[in-house]
Amino acid sequence: MSWHFDNGRPIYTQLLERVRFLIISGQYPPGSKLPSVRDLASEASVNPNTMQRALAELERSRLICSHRTTGRFVTEDEEMIHEMKESMGREKILTFFHEMKQMGYDRDQTTALIEKILKEKTI
Amino acid sequence: MNRILEYSHVTKQFGSLCALQDVSLTVEPGHIVGLLGPNGSGKTTLLKIASGLLVPTSGTVSICGLPVGPESKSRISYLPDKNYLSDWMKVSQIIDLFHDFYLNFDRNKAYEMLQRLDISPKQKLKTLSKGTREKVQLILVMSRNADLYLLDEPIGGVDPAARDYILQTILTNYNEQGSILISTHLISDVEQVLDQVIFLKNGVITLQSSVDDIRAQYEKSVDELFREVFQC
Image (cartoon, each protein chain N blue to C red):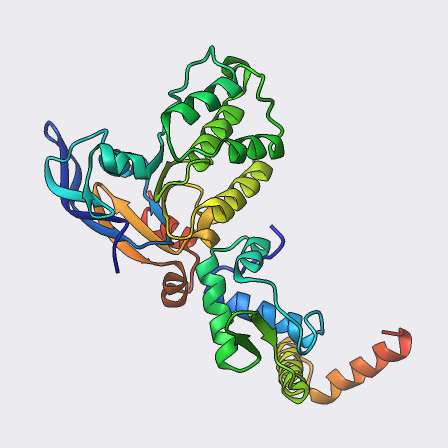
């Protein structure tokens, strides 16, 4: 099974996040057609109804839209995709700072460490 | 919405033993429902009643609005918990038998699945391992275009790699109006293909909910919840 799911969180939420990630990272480019619910469900080895629910939720957030007969498409609104990308990036970084804090690093120590690592390696 | 399967206040007693007690449940079209419970909780009895192998002591069961009988049986594809195929037969002969027996049996589908799972149609059943035999039975059952599939422990003896393929097969092959009721202990393997789960404890339904509602409400996977509820 190619998609992995965490325990304790609804599967449809995790599917939604995964598809959103595929859009933000450009694997499903703006305006492109998404695979069918059945194909996506089969790829993820999940129940088609659950996949349907995740896509319906993404549709509500306008990240994807459905054309009645031709299927579902990624939005062409690149600005919107960009905003979503930034907000996800932001979230990751905040989580990171939070975890560093728990480890005993304050803000300056964390940024100092980041810079140190950046100098040592090319990431 | 018309229901594929409906149990209404079903009770089954074997002498003084109460195997099922006042069980009511419905299965909607297009849904995959997991029937989960420890050993001896009544899962097999419940499935046998829908397939017509057992008659309930009281209560009624209907399949697509029909009472259990010859017509309902033609709409149900049932995988029993026992091996009921004749040992001396070749896989291909069993496929012929099923083809003769069931109008809705799709021979091509069966051969396709055999090939994917690397099972030779020429082999005799008695030469197959337990797991392979289980695969053959499941292939036969899933090759029918039925409205309702009743699967009693379908993946118990099957290796994890084939398990994945079988779950895929179940997902892609059941017809979209049809439903599947599947009893199993291997919850973490099937959890993500289920719409709904039913917990059965000593013949009583203790929980009936969707997988994602359970995860949202208990912040646990169904597997974890099961282990907690049925802790020994």
